[in-house]
Structure formats: C-alpha cells, structure tokens
Length: 535
Image 1 (cartoon, helix red, strand yellow):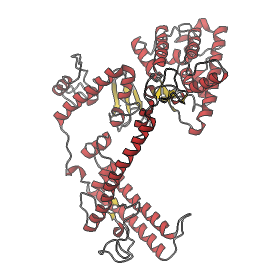
Image 2 (image 1 turned 90 degrees about the vertical axis):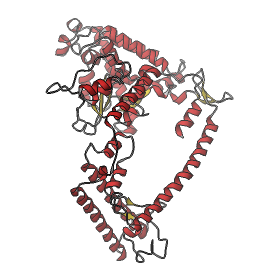
Image 3 (image 1 turned 90 degrees about the horizontal axis):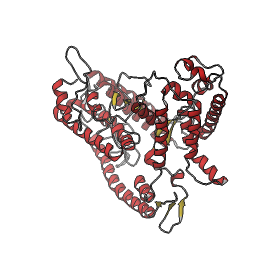
C-alpha cells in the first residue's frame, strides 16, 4: 500500500494527469492507496478486459486472471500476457479503440509510471531467493528417491528379462522410455513442490509470473534439482566401453551414470554431473547457432517468394503480373488487426436457457416487461411486434443450428475470432450516453429488429447478386451475423443493457463505420506481411 507522499510522487509521472488524487482504497487509520489504482491512471477508459482465472470465480483470492472495467483495474496482475504484444491485450485494444496515438499514450504512460515506481522501490534478485526451506528440501528428496526406486525396479526387470516391450519398440527402447518418464516426473514433482513453497514476494517468482524473465523450470532448477541431461534426444550415451565416464562401472544404467543431475544449482553439481551438464549445454549452443542460420535463410526465401503480393482495390490479392492469388484476402477481406476473440454465447446454452434469454412472448409478457420497460403495457398483445419478435427468434434458432454445425470440429469452444468487439462498442455507448442499470428503455421491436436487419444487409463482404456471390457472402459473414443478432437481440438490449434510442443508433452507426474500416487497405503488401509473421 502507498502513502499519500508516494502517490503524489507517482502522479507527477502520469501523462496528462488532471491534478486530482484518486480516492484512497483504505481511509482509516491512515489513508492508503493500492498499486492497482496508480496503474489504472494510465489505462485508457475505453479499455475493458476480462480474463477469467482458472478457478472461474469472480474476485479470485490469489489475484489470478484479470478484470479491467472502463480503464479501472479491478483484480489481477498486469502481466506480459496483457501488456505485451499479444492479441487481445491492452495495446491491441487501445490501438483498435483510439488509434496509434492512444496506443502510444498508453505505452508511454506505463513506461514512465512503472520506471519511476521501480526507481523508488527497486527490484533485485539474490541467492536468498533460491533457498528452499527445510521441509521443502526433504519433500524434494522424497520425490527423487521414489523415482530412483522406480528406475531401480525397471533395471531389475530388464536384467531379469521380465520387461514387456511396448508396441513398436524393442526391450531396450522400452526401458529407456520408461526410465525417462520416471526421471522427468521426479523433476516436475520437485519443481511444483518448490514453487508452492516460495512466497509471492520472492523476486524469482515475481519475474516468472509477470513474464519479464525466466520460467518455473528455471526456478525449480535453481532450487530443487537440475534434472536429466539430454544429448541428441537421449540420455548421455556411452562414450567409453559400456560406460559414460571411467568413473562408473561398466554396464551401469543407473540415473547418475546416464546424466541425471539430482543437485540444484544452489547446492552445486558433482564433477561428473558438471561434465554431463556441459555436454548438454554444448549441444544447445551449437544447435542455436545452426538454427539461426537455417531459419534466417528459410525466412529470406519466404520473403522472396511472397514479396510482390498485395491487396488490390477490387479486394483480390495479386502478384506483380496481376495474377489472382486469392479472390478475397484471407477469405473474408478483413484486416487481421480488427479481429479479436469474442464469445458467441448461443452455442453451449441448454434449450431452456436459450429460450429464457432470447424469447419474448407478447401474448403473456413477463413481469419485468411491464415494470422496467417504457412501452410494456402498450405492446402487450401487439400483432406486428409479435411477428417481428417471432422472426428474430427463428433467426436466432437457425443461427444456433448452423454455427453448431460449423463448430462441431472444435467441440464446445465458444470463443471465436471475429471482427469489431461488439461488447466494447455497447459499453462505450452506455458510457457516452450515461445509460444506467435501472433506466427504462424506449426502444420498440419495430425500431430494433428492422434496423439490425437493415444494418446486416448493408454488411457485405462479397458483392454481387449472382448465386455464387450470394453463397460466398453468406459463408463469409455467417459467424459475424450470428454474433450481432445474439448480442443485439431485442430482449438483451431492453432487459440487460437498458439502451435508449440515442445509444442504440450510436451503436449501429459505430458498427457500420467500423465495418467499413475493418477491410484490408488496398496496396497493403500482404505477402511480405505473411512471410514476416511466419518467420
């Protein structure tokens, strides 16, 4: 927690700060602020992100996952996953919402605030961060002993010729396979045990969890054990007659003699362990040098092959001779930058849930319809509105059927890569027009359903009225239209979002405007872009 002095000091490093110190998180006995409040000052208010933790709970105890609501960090840690160059991260969202200036402002702000914070608090790592407590050391030893006993059992079996060969392997390969599995298990178990024993304030853990440097494997190698050394994909080979080094007896297949390092870097390696480790390390160095040359040359050939492909004014991708390579860039003509992961919620619901969420029967309307909706009594039993709502319901049902069929291969994955983040457009409209959670909506079915149908009819990818063009256009837009129809269904707009006419028109305008800008720009050198992205 930060004192008032620290907060005032940090505020001076927030770009375009309005001079107002935020309300402290703790008022008594002394006012104190949290780091989340400070970093929220530089997150643009257009950004809303939600990444559920593994436990799927709201407000998780261990601060996993992430929730940002209109620029306020509610819970979670800002790790590389959300601030780094990742799809759906804050930089990506800021760029799509605010353009290059907005993304730059965020990057500069984070850089200044965090640099100043680190200047004040410091961050270093020392030998103390790798020392496990006594109980952990004992647990790790137990893991190692268990798996070594397993290896001894396997060795005895193999010697007595009782080991059954696995399909497609001889007995020796089976033995090696099972031993490797046992030793890797020892490393993994020891690693998880030490990881759990280290505190969150441990500098190595901080670095690994934030994604700035290192991983859990590095930490477990420093603290618990280094593990099996691998050369050419196998355990250390016999370099001398029937043994790896003259320090061992012949025909010794035990873990130590074949390069299993059971010490951690903290405890230090024995001479033979050190030698095996140097063997594996040397291979890694040579491998890296060779890989660099190989991948560099592959990359260059790729770029030379694709260097003249560009998107043209007619939406096709062609080379310098004008030969068509793709009739539509990426089969949908959209710039990949505008595409984000979005949840298509209609797939996994049960039929009853689906009906409860989207079906609205005006013949006997529910309680909220009369109470929380402007025209509730007037529209009860209204024939034209009923017809519209029934048409919407049929469209949603057919969307659900079609998308489920398309998505069959991916089982029940609801997240899809689709253009224009609708959820954010709705949220920003609610913010701009100050829509409250208890407002009464003044939209009629005749406003909503007809307007959305008109908007979807304007959203074309393949233009043309011949049967083939119409089919291609339907295929290219089916997922997007299903998303729009489900997110902007009449019941959801009126009951959940409580939108008024102004906000609704704003959303439609914004979606159409962004749709027209989501297409790839003519002249974009998509070939080099693809080659660069692969390399």
